[in-house]
Length: 434
Image (tube, rainbow, N blue to C red; front, side, top):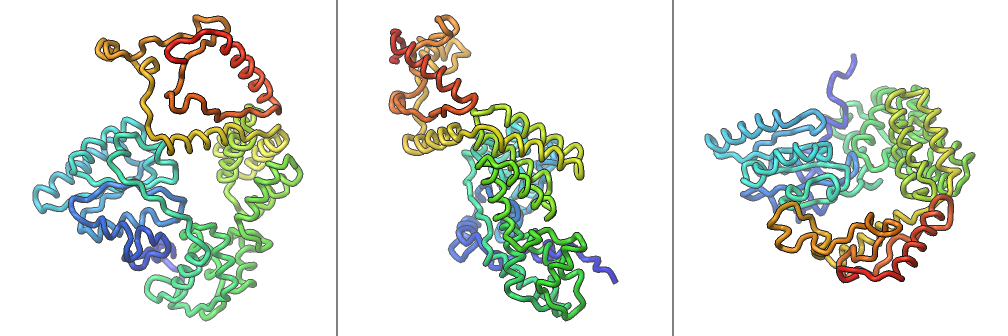
């Protein structure tokens, strides 16, 4: 008789903070979520990789406070849905005094207008926002909303954490597979944990795939893994190598400019069932991080391939990936942009939010102009070569150099152009303190 219950990963969701594996800084005995379960409820953002427990922690936090928990998907819900949630929250507060926690999954998918619509209700305390995202909060959440939220980083679950979850699922009679009396080799559970790459949902899904082919009382062993793989159910490296090791070899082969090796590892990923969309995203990142301005076209090729993969799907998506991978692998390499940003971010952490020089500030009104905003700004287009010597940074960081272009590919031209401009400007007089 078929199992009509929800997937194992849904059934095994923790029902209390005590059941949460990993994320001890949030859910442990002295974790922040336990200390924050007071009124008025705080708003916070959970930032972490897929399967690290963001939704589960949000739900458990709401239960520990007695608040109403209203789940939202930023992909499916918009401003009209938010208005209805606000009306319901007002009624709940008026008639039974219960606060409302609005959980917005994938909050980075909400645009500025949608986030702006949420802001006044967070400010007033009507809604306590818990947002979840896999993206960088600093870039994806508007500053006014971000300033009213604490940001908590969730770490990728380790192999030991996932092995605990897998063993628990095998033993749990009510929610897991305990009624089937399955046994498991410890090394096989470790293999499943590695293949899941820190994702609890994926780990439990892999276990469920293997268990589907076993009789009650059977053993989750290497033979069961191979059988599940042959059925096309188990997504893992067929040679037993850790999933992240194959991905690492793929990226390092591209970085090492070996297209044959990169294609081999690409084939390994595809043969193991890696979603082509995930591979395409990694190639896009590689094009910006490792190729950079040495060949700006690489990013165009990678992004076009990623969009094409979404359009055509498998099996044709493999052709698009092969083109993008071979192009980016064969391109000249530069990490100058990536390293420059890292240096600038470190400097910002060190110096804080230095004030923008007055001549660089926006001056849309008479009041701002009267306060000196924009005064003394020199328009580069009015000068020979369309460059002019002036200060573009706060004086505390004016002498810092972050971007050091290489002498490879198109970046060599950029290096020569920047050197020419610096030489040209050093011979000119400047204004506004330059």
